[in-house]
Length: 221
Image (cartoon, rainbow, N blue to C red; front, top):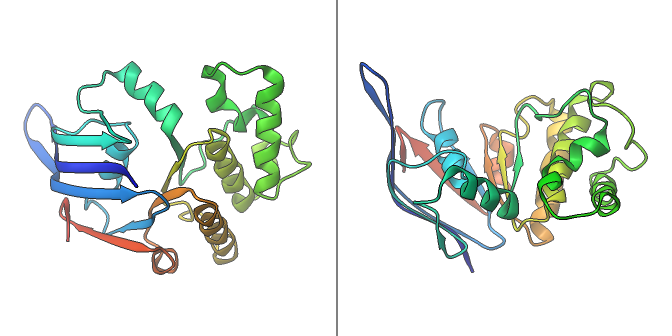
């Protein structure tokens, strides 16, 4: 089942004095239960591609179809609502709020949904347990290791209960041991039926993915 389709996607960043072509005529299909690694050197367009897939940025040309819906002409508010409904994000730098405890961090994406506080907290606790952090709900991010913080970030993405997980360099700030643990968790999520797309420089992660997409100079090669 096709979940995401990019057709002839181009992205140009313009300034007053010049323009930079970040993506050239990119075509990509992501199917249900895919586990995809997007690799390539810095500046090749990986992050731009991820931001377009995640409805954070808009393409300059081409079409992006997400679960049958053409997103090309959506406004910022519509894109935000669709993103929250359909896509969970995992960031390299965790993007946790130190002033909030772990449970409060995990349920942040649920605050714009019509859910009771009780249901939000139950949902958050369920996914903290899923990533091996049961009993730490009242801890704060600064009290955790980097590997534990990334697990919180994964729990937050899971709490949205979306079919699609986008992960931007999820092991980029972790040591080898914690990287292995996060890799196992991503594979487990994929085995549970999640579609996972990972930007990574880590060859160990890439080789465990079902598909590897290589990029260079804004193109898929």
